[in-house]
Length: 545
Image (cartoon, rainbow, N blue to C red; front, side, top):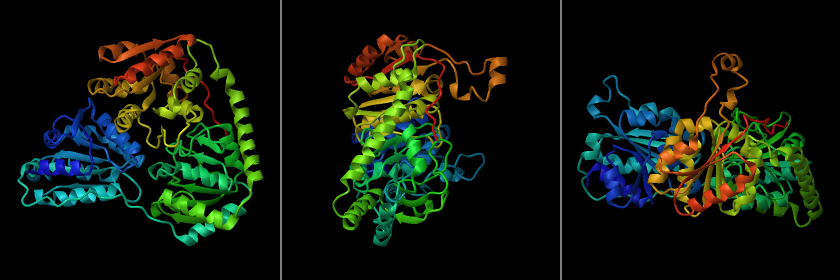
């Protein structure tokens, strides 16, 4: 067995279903030989995205893997890996490397060094005998603490060298950290003493698969639940205490409850300040629970820290609330549910004109409304792309199951949603996996819809085509007026047809629902579909607070 075969065998033992790759990497053939399916992308960052989306849906218990060619291949993968790092996604990158003798001869792209700032851990393999130890460290890093991508650089001679002795490797289990009981006791005391407690749910709730337990905790307190962008659907958005997720846009009740909260407990969130996420208003008492102590007091002063896995933290909180509070409190819960429902009605009434619009070009919010009514949301995994689609989708797409929305946006590279949707479909083949992207996003990565067609990955790509770079129209006024820099255009249905992807272009409101049903029928036959909607240039987003 050579070095590449050692890595393939370890991937097999770790339960790897497929290797996302392109196209020259020593581990591809050994993986294929033992039935790890190679999936060739057209662009490396999309291939990274495929591994990324798979890891998100498998909640880190299985990890996506991307194999990159040495030199230009791993160079071209940088945007996807950097995005995954900002989103804390646990996946493995196996990068081809130049011979060891060339590692310090300029110019050389030394992947293990270059990627160190945007990976949780990275290493260069120096000899074949150390590969089992390197792979063990990689999986340990992925499956403990805050998630993140890891990278192993594999030089040619290490990949080709003969491994001596028996391969000693067993799969690495997920490591979870339990919270300090005294911190749990104090947190519950603070929450029960609060006049307006609020739970703030982050992506860690997804990885802990703690959504239903979090909803139960919210009802016990009682307290409404807001979610970050990556935390959206931590509890189902149609739960009576859910206020949804947020980026720069959010629901009105999200902003109202966040404003009046006196004690906020963040669970499974780094509480990182970003341009595309909610911020904690000043003057709040903050209880910060995360599985990484490095997040505590990073951006916000924590009045109390509770370090631990989100699922174990919620379990401990539920037990402690039951001990401290005892039975009763039904009237407070009923009153809070009514308050949330009333706020939601007011907000949706304000937006009803757009959600029910019959105008042409199409109104994006009308398309979102019709998707909500047409799709079986219990069977959908939804995501958005960067820019306007993110701001339009996050507040208004109402999930019915915890963990059914892939929110993202700390780095916000255009085109990211396409890859992670394919990965989600590979992780959950019975689900309808949908990515809503703009025309500018399609220009970045749209050619990879052919990857979905070639590999029978039945995703639905929804393109909002408004013929303009909408997110930049407020900052490039002179450039656009003088040189037309924001105008982008095209018929993406024709592009899809040329790439062997079934497609349809819709420009009339009456045709939206029929087109959606046609698209779903095609995806159920393991084939992708591109649905292009000719929409308005844009609208004000749901920005409150």
